Length: 398
Image 1 (cartoon, rainbow, N blue to C red):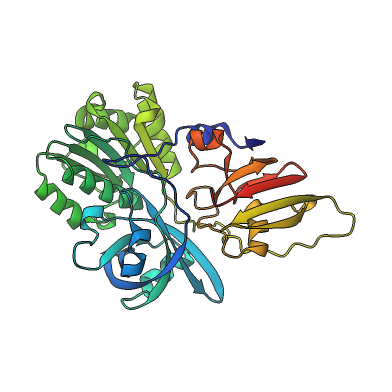
Image 2: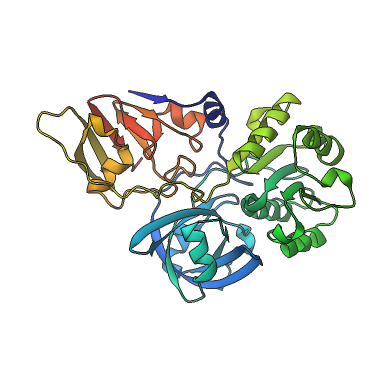
């Protein structure tokens, strides 16, 4: 059994750095991703181009929506007769996301992308009382620090990459009276800053333990260091003057590929060990990406060479013949016989389609979600995996 990761060297480097854990607790066992229909409780404007959407979780589904700060959910709806799925990070700390005697609520932030079907619909059409399918929380952009006493955690975010860091910062600060969080958040201008008031409130609540630095690329700030685009020179100056890397126990990076890679390379260059750096490539999957697969029809011609793909899901197995010439992903093949096969972004980012490769070998086009130990144990992203042997056996239930 072998799983080969084919792609650019940079993408392999990114995949090799992924880690998983839980803020203040042990590593969480992964659970089967399932959709639940939830009611929209509130839609709150954050900026002219972003909203926070809060969902009410019914009591019978409460256990499926326990989550860790930094995790995400997938949303699913029908637009113009087509199923559309998008992944969004949970933006509220677990302790403030509901609970107690009241109903559990979860919240995500949705920023409108130019030409983005889902984000545009959410901005203009989504309203309280609507119902939408929400997948149980997933993701490994979580902390490994079992003890937060005296811990210093740092985060660097751009634009909508602030979403998971909102939950992480609030959680780290709430769970220890001696923890610290330093947040560097870059945007074009003040009007683009998501959660501006919430961040100010968090700073008021923890004035001595939260260091908050807004960097604006197209707006002049009083401090020249915080005015302008973050390039390597500015990043190094910010780290030296405002963050103090030698004091940081754990790093969280979230934003576009270029910023995340710049931060990772710079941190590595100044001696920060990769195991202390968590990152997430923030994407809504819009910006020109093709829609997620829906099991496109594949015709198998007589005497045509095929891959035989065996898929196990919820204890039931099925075998699909996939023509070698079709270069079909395992996910697409699975969806032709199991429309409930789990997926969200279909871009190798979210990890929802993760499965165990039991037999055979595959190539993975992209991988931003699987951790090194998962790769070693044979896990693959089915949305990015293509068979390279006559028979491939994958198991979603492990």
